[in-house]
Image (cartoon, rainbow, N blue to C red):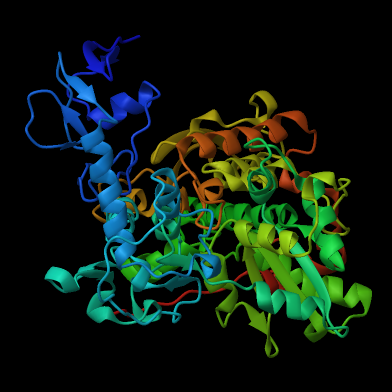
Amino acid sequence: MTTTTTVPIEVNGRAVDAIPGEVLLKTLKRAGIHVPTLCYIEGLSPTGACRMCVVEIEGQRSLIPACAFPVTAGLKVQTHSKRAVAARKTIVELLLADHPDDCLFCERNHHCQLQTLAEEFGIRNRHYVGAKDTFARDYSGESIVRDPEKCIKCGKCVRVCEEIQGVACIDFICRGSKTTVGTAFNEGLNISSCVNCGQCVTACPVGALTGKSHIDRVVDALRDPNKVVILQHAPSVSVSLGEEFNLPIGIDTVGLLHAAGRAVGFRYVFDTSFGADLTIMEEATELVQRVTAFLKGEKAVLPMFTSCSPGWIKYVETFYPENIPNLSSCKSPMGMQAAVTKTFFAEKQGIDPKNIFSVAIMPCTAKKFEASRAEMGREGYQDTDAVLTTREYAQLIRSFNLDFTALQPEPADTPFGTRSTAGKIFGVTGGVMEAAIRSAYYFITGKDLPTKNLRVDAVRGLEGIKEAHLDIDVPGFGVVNVGVAVVNGLGNAKRLLDAINSGEKKDLHFIEVMTCPGGCVGGGGQPYGTDLDKIKMRTRALYTIDDNESLRTSHGNPDVIRIYKEYLGEPCGHRAHELLHTFYHEREVLT
């Protein structure tokens, strides 16, 4: 165990232990001393762009941004001196001078850091008046709305998009006082390299970037007597939705989620974790087929990549089209769930699929893009008609004046109500891989994994890239060492892809990629204010569910077995392939 050397500094007249060389802001945060910032991102190099975190340091003539100043022994710091507070207040007043006065109509109302700072500093009058910049809003994208008039030029979205996600579809454009954040040639998001992940939305401290709401179309469907409106919800939503109603972080609200859905008018409520179990049946089978073909010396594209994260799919289509054959042809759990809802379920209930309005509650803004893809439907209709993020579902519940916490928990509807915990852990990075390993191992050997509680600890955790190697006794081929990797965050995916394509990595057969850091628990549609601690608590909640329940494999789900027996046939068979698989294509974008 290593110990970190600390040095003493003085902050506001009291002694504080600090780590030499780390930025002062981190020291202050660890000591429980709050200093506001609008541009700082934990884990990335500081920019000092917003200057909100300025402090007074003895011996320094100017105010110093705490986010960019390295700690040394003997510092004497005043975080809330009259001079520092006055400077911060002036910065807020200057930002407000060029900011729209539409807080009541803004999606970020009550969740806006600029609004919060104005409240903290008691700003009640406009001290700076002048001509405001005017820009058109960009509604062109399927998932994200861009409002440059609200941009405060903190640069957080730019850095997240470039440094964390490796996409760089937005940047500072123009010069001088005309500088703003935009796409290449200031064109619409729809023709940019945007992958719709929404990480820019969660990073933005104001309302310059927001999700494109589907609430109105859902409400219209709920009021249409000719529509059978059906809800499905992603695995991670149940452990994050409660935060919108001031419940403890990570609490599982799945029963309340179902009850709220029925209370607002959804005819049926399904759990997308069932769709995740279907995904594993198809994906694990596809993996076994590819590996078996490879062992036989036949043509097989390896490594195989998971395909349940739509931002990742568009990333490959845009930046690495040569790797499209590596992608599993499986639809995402949302796509599979929606497909069997408008086919198998519609037939069983005698409902015309065109009268079904299928709504998905997702932690992900990119799911709106996925739902719009032409290949995600048939016979003139889309399988998924609307996608609500976790935030939007909470807004829908509030708009019906429901007391969420007073509802009585209810189960999901059958036949898509039974799910395994393998499907439930899809919500965390490594969860898809662990679920797939559990079933693939069984498909190959006829036995369950010989690990305690079927756990695969090597693929758990929030590291950007994790690798593991499993020895599996494959009939007819002996013991085969299968290499797997788990990636979260597209910047990490880029590093692994480059290593694979250059030939540096040759020992991997199966790779899970989640677009967002932490997986779906850190998705772009989750409650605002997502940070690493919240992601960890949501992750822990999903693994606790996995530890405490008995149905822990997708292939053991009796309702999954039933749908294959009654309707789909064999995994990766003709009908299953027709409904549950898809294809991808190269995309051209402005650069």
